[in-house]
Length: 311
View: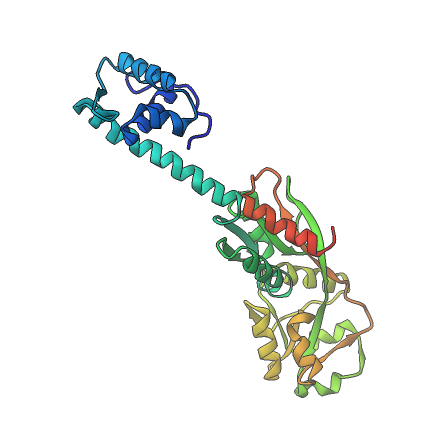
């Protein structure tokens, strides 16, 4: 039942080998030194010797002979009540550990934004759950800067983030997908459709964009500043899905990652504005912290991501 146990002092400082308690537990539970020897794969004299050494160390008689085997003394009954709990907890711990290593038990903590979750991570989570249905997956939904902070603090196993972001000491990142930021609009802004626009014209339009503490907003602001364009957004929203909904209702020109608007661009309810300057593409990355030990479940989830990318 037990794996190798370390030698240590007992409560009284007189017993320095937990193997004695292991033998005592099996003998008391079986009511037989012979049966205990069989369970432990040792000889019956070895069992007898271990019991005698434990009794000598504790200065107490633990067993008396019975017609068939042995039975506990009053002192032995008292000790067994405590030893049994410890033995059974160790056995349970080993069982749970085995289940964790076999991916029958465990948790994964992942940090991801709405965009990285929806357009990259979700299909992999679905595959992982089908393969390991007993693994609990906790996804902390947060912008990239907050996700990277959680990764540094060891609160999550890994993060799925989008560029740009500040390099953080000790973190490792792997590019897994390309994304593209676009400006989209509905029929109210049809005069801009199929025209090649100057970026400066954005300053005249009612803009709908994400609020400030996101990598997407920081990226677009920096790109536009570099081209001498300063936006005064009409609406600043918490999610890209809401930006698309506002654009569908002709409340302004929305700035989103193309994936969020793809369905509406394809069916014609929205169109994409074209500019004489190309907006550079960004990337989704998987970020890990080598200083954080990973559970077997987290290691297998990362392995799945690598496998699906052919790494």
